[in-house]
Length: 227
Image 1: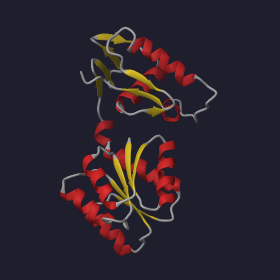
Image 2: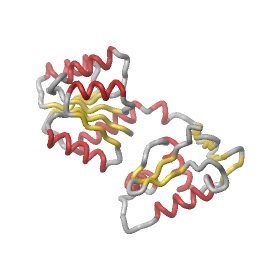
Image 3: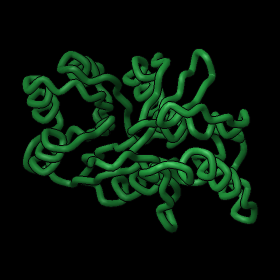
């Protein structure tokens, strides 16, 4: 998931980018309202965290322009403006949530994940996941590639489902550990590397093109080549 942060306070912006990055999100940070609006209009973001008081353009103007342009990306206002009237204004302009500074990072993270789940509910209801000639039928619990059935263990199935649902995204090992094994990532264990290697022997090695790629120092990504 890619998040856009528009925040001119240097410490707050850096704190958000680092914390959300460690939580498994790709982040883009803009410190000026005009740059933030340009990024929001031209980028492909899953959620925007937006301050109100910004140089160039304020958050109200950014959100209003986004909604007038038909962009329905979820927007979370994160601002020191704590008056009821400000909250009402933000929501009426089309914000999806409003969090007042100072804030607890755990609460911010929970709100971000809630908004993302809400925005991706249609994806969550998909029963057939595909990438190139790879298909995963979630109802019948079957995987095939180029028409050939592939037998996976329960964990391999969960790992492949995660990679398919978020294909194109580099997934950190910490995220994979929490989503597939429901555990905190331990750098001393190679359980994830072993699982990915075994999955590749079934999904990639007998076929072309290769779909699962290692991004050194970051994690793993599943993506189909454009050609």
